Length: 286
Image 1: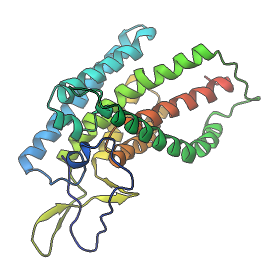
Image 2 (image 1 turned 60 degrees about the horizontal axis):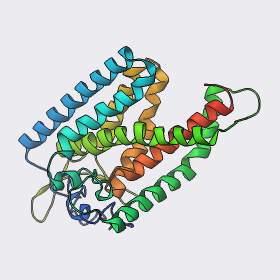
Image 3 (image 1 turned 135 degrees about the vertical axis):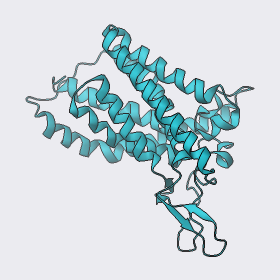
Image 4 (image 1 turned 90 degrees about the vertical axis):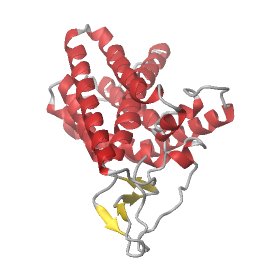
């Protein structure tokens, strides 16, 4: 689907340290497949940017016109509908290549429970690692930004807490990750396979330059998708602070590249939202 890593001998190509989100995706969904011809890349760019603009306009209108209690559900349905229209209703290979197989749940045929459990465990493991690394610095940054007064105090109703976690996971994180990382980032990777091009001195073939980071092969689509993600958040609520979601979006996009699926991004995205909500409520800031 996306670009092949540099074949120049001075560029290391490491095998993945962990298995991809699902076995079939390992051969079809890696960012090491050859870049397509210019015409195909141009069509991919036009489609991705047009769909992103239409979806952003739709969720902005919904946020402005619908009652607050319906906004989250409506926005989620827009994201899921766009993902279905451009990926899920297609063939299995496209679903796998976009990282949207979700452990095989959305694919026809008998569900492979072993694959599903393996995918879920991998996604949760990556999300927990990222939470362990990022939540402490986020807490101190949050403190400096909001300047909360008083001690942290949080009275939890277990059922309400479970409902909030479910909402963040299924109504917020799943639809956003399916659209932005599953469809948009994958499609933009076809349009923007690398940061320029490298010519192989042996074969003369031109291959995209990609950034290799902790076993993930990253392309410009990560930055473009994160910018669109941030602009979409700003469009729904005109607060410049909303643009800061560009940075966690980089982490969600990295997880999409590293794991070959969106499961880890969904889990970490939900964790981030829940953690932020806990801080806001516990310090009575929002």
